Length: 199
Length: 396
Image (cartoon, rainbow over all chains, first blue to last red; front, side, top):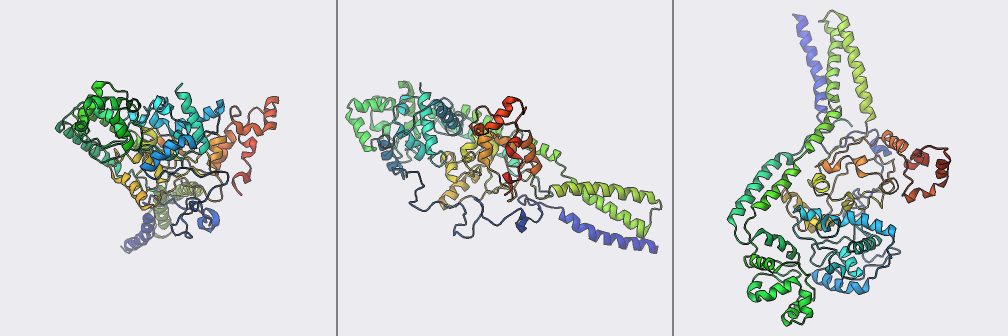
């Protein structure tokens, strides 16, 4: 009899060991990336700021700060025309044909690159052949019909005007500005490629 | 890393409900409205870029009441080719052209009948009948979304020995009990039972400890909850948007880049309602734009800071496909880290991937290797041959 009571006692002690272990195993926090060895002792996580890490120095907590207003990067020129609202965009687009000139001459290599870039940035809406029948429109995901790039309306425009639309978006605002995504060189390659689409 | 929760999230449960709900709503409205053919609505999609019906002036004039203001014949001509009409010296056309900042209205390849239908649609304030057909098309698209994300998750789950921790705890309990019994309580007389249990548990626990210790600091199958329920399956899979449309610095920078909210707006300026989450999640983007605050996405694929990894090098020179490292992103609603991103995994690829000399300018600088390949000194060139195995390439 005495033996049995002892056994119960030990089992209880055992339970005291085991229950915390079971609790430890309930790691329900999905956003916890897990454990690491000496992570914060300069092993896994070092102290320097990374491009996307929060930053205590700046008031907006962003490490990847924008350049100061009016700063111009070496070797580049600021965009010459204003494009704040619809009115400005309309006026600037009219002007851009004369103001912005295509600095590139298309060759085989740049056209191939232009085709690749067109596939990445344009074909979703304007279609692989530029007919305005991209997948986003034909599958009814995007409500407005994209402009056909092969018809006279676009093909009659000067290169600078198309450059303006890629950089700052269309007048209506249905096509958003792609200037942040596509570098100036790449934009000219795309324009040269669009010219070949109509042929 | 030990175990992260691995539960598919609420939208899966919501989806079915939303699908049926949206469908019945669509059907309901399609039978209560009236007006012109569905074709007019489709054609008006082009006009919507610059015009509203009763929604105020955009680029072009508000079209409410336009059919009463001008006669039909003139409108047909203007809609078909406004520039031609202006150049022919039509006073009314020139007046409209000048009133709206001299922005020409693009020509439309529509027949007279189609334009008349369109004008009726406008006169009717943009209402239409016969949208039952459109409703069917939209449901098909919705059902498309439901396919196979769960499957993928389940497969990953099965492959990974995710029950290891439970096994470990059970074995530990068994071990403790048998040790207690052996030393203190002595309920079971046959000592070989204890010894077998202890031996098995020690061996298996040892293995689990080894595997988990090796995975320490690695984050395989990490699937954090993001601040916006953004689905790569919808955007990259169903919508077929190229990875580099949003991650546009992948071939220029060491970071693939998280797109700024302005990139989202390229489409979501117009698309305000999603098929899975409705307006709730897309509204967060517009809120972020209004507040001028970036969305704090959570990074899924983390490397320790003592490793240098450059996306541009792998995408440009290496021509590595995004999916090779990130898994089938176009099938994932929420991104999960498929590969373990261990050093062994990196080095494995560097040793086995053969360098593609043809049509890749980057490797023209490795002339000596080229020569050796020609002479037959080397039968293949891997990244390792190029020095992809040197410590300082990634650790410095």
